[in-house]
Image 1 (tube, each protein chain N blue to C red):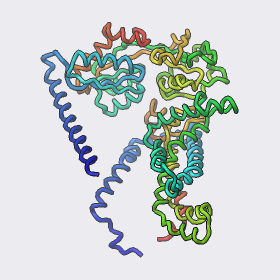
Image 2 (cartoon, helix red, strand yellow; image 1 turned 45 degrees about the horizontal axis):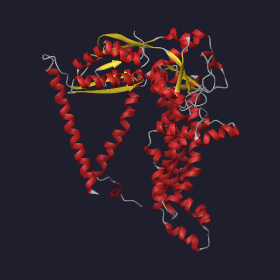
Image 3 (tube, helix red, strand yellow; image 1 turned 45 degrees about the vertical axis):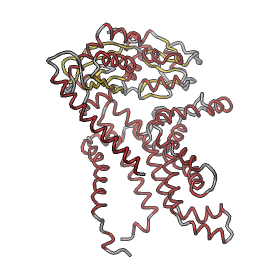
Length: 263
Length: 268
């Protein structure tokens, strides 16, 4: 009975020491700004869930170039992230999946400089492999007999969804209004819905189990992605380096591979 | 019966207890401080809220009923029977407690979804599809909440004096009669406590519900889902909605408590 307790205590001690260590590194980074080479400490990036794969890759690249840098990500819906940031979450970079949630952060004077649009994304129809319900376009979202998922109007992909349905003049009859775009995609991957409206990038990320169908009305709801360094960033140097990497030809190529468009 | 000295709380218990109360209640105080009270009435009377609240109460109550019917016998098996592998069984029963609810929702798809092991057969043979229906809400809530009831009732059964059951057996009652006439009344408070826990957990259920049942106003959008989506756009209305849920659930529990403990409550 005592042994597990002892190892728990040891784990706690290690965690505490690690905590102190990273604080020290953060201070070092601030002092090291004059030197200019080699980023250190921890970089915390808050990014929209749709950026998960690309940003993870770019983060690893930045870590490889700066061995003393540890890049941490918080991927979630942009509005949840904006809430966390306005509530004081210690983030360095915020990449939002729509300008509206970026405005929440800039209105609270939490952005360092002007946010910059670094990429954009459009909606696509996602269907399970083989397209069992023969979905061909937006009009199929009015078919009562199909099981259909779209994003809830409260979240960014849902606002885009309303725009494309309005542009196409389709009265959709969804069975579920999903809380975020990945949740909608999961239901397509599991074959539990006949079609869902998600982003082109989500279809690209899903691989073989999901097929994407592009539709012309998507141009009425092009989604721009702004990014900014946060005013209270604990590690501003690394934050600026990350934002530069995202806008660089390298970063743009990684984004294009994942189905994003250039801004 | 009790003297004054027995009623006083010793300091080593009092201090942590007060800390515990502060820890549990302060977040609620935080909510109350931020509540835009002027929005309370418009929110309460907006059509979507009543619908979500009604759906929450109905589905949590149904989930509790299903949990009682299935969970009390399971608790008895865990506490009283001598079947082999009870330890493994108990561990399995507690899986939904440790499983992230969203994963629980995906697991439910894999069994009861259109492509699931059982769901595929239900779809083909009876044309029944469960996901994205109110039934799916009840199933998701039952999956997450039933373990709370099972564990409470099992604890009550273990703590109950087995001599009453032995006496009943000596007097010629079979095990089923003993269960109905002796065991159930004996552990009734434990069952009630378990049912309350189960109901409260079902009422707050979010992850498994939004995954397996989806989110559609009137059919599957319970209050926690409505609160989550409100939070995406308007945090203030989300606070109001969560307070509504909180007030209704507290009122229900207090009302039930008054009814159960009617006489004890009336005593000074």
